[in-house]
Amino acid sequence: MRQLVASNWYLEWEIHRNNPGLLGDIAAVLGMLTINIQTINGVEPCKRGMLIQTDDDEKINLLKSVLDALEDITVTALRKSTVMDTLAVRHGKYSVQDTREEKIFRFARDEIGLLVEFMGEIFKKNGHQLIGVRGMPRVGKTEAMIAASVSANKRWTLVSSTLLRQTARNQLAMNEWAGESVYIIDGVVSTLRGTNKHRKLMEKVLALEATKVIEHPDIFARETGGSLADFDYIIELRNHPDEEITYEVVNASISNFDIT
Image (tube, rainbow, N blue to C red):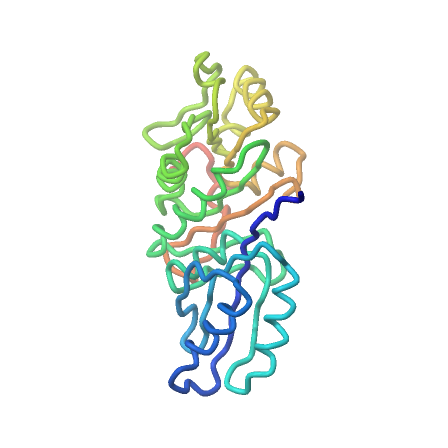
């Protein structure tokens, strides 16, 4: 007998007329289709987001047909749920995703809790992942990575960093190679200040079936001959939404730039 596996979906709708009982009507439709409601929240002033679960994807098509017939709402999304969908419903807002490049996600410093939770969900995945983090000095990039590692119950290992002082390690301890870890690499320190021994260590780390997080991915890609296409996610952290992330000061004076 085939075992049914439940799948998680994200349902979002825009409200045209917020009539009394509207949410109850939608919940009743889900109940009749035996689709479970997990979480609901507002994601924009006139939009609601809902995480739902079903063991029969055909019910999703039926749900869409019924909701499309309602005059008071317009369904704006009905898809397999993503990390961003889960966080949007949980926090009541979406983080900004680049419309030209889906792998780029933007956060402001006052959203650092949301960023930590987002990265923590990514870090929970096993196997190879390459994640780039852009941001100006002292915006909190490394601290957010460490907090996200703790949130994901993963060990974090600094391969290179300027968190406390400039560090470009030439070797890792045996226990740092074992188990599930998140490896943090400062793209400036490793490529522009690292020794040959450090670069060999970095190459070994990059070959691991584990999560690697690269601060300053643009410089890292430029100096290693790689490409931003190699990254699974690129996260941008700004002090405020309109801040420009620039590396002109890095190119002008690498030795004097505190890039933590």
